[in-house]
Length: 141
Image (cartoon, rainbow, N blue to C red):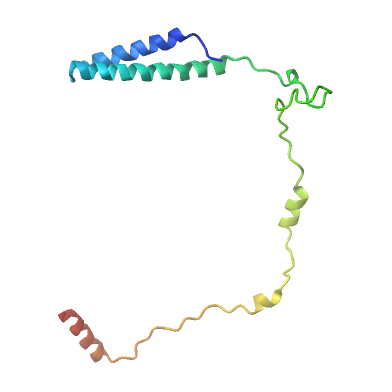
């Protein structure tokens, strides 16, 4: 399923090594450039495998559906199994229509018992003088 040969990977690794080595040689030591070139060579080598796989997958001829044997064609057990995928789904339109129809409430008493929440209002019954004293007392500390 791979396209081409291993030579493509080797050439890709060599190109990655040369490019990385030459570009990093100006700003790094020789040993650092050599190590980075070897790492880049390995990465380019592995990337070439991915590219070869994609090219092999894209250039592979398509197989028509009639080329696959049917499971119920009288073949032996296990032959042809897993080669055909049936993507039909059962008709569920009746279930969907039932869900869309309004249904009568089974317990109307619960709806009649509903009362919105009425929280008590927070109103202070303190005198403004006392409130001012409390604020002065708290700001002094």
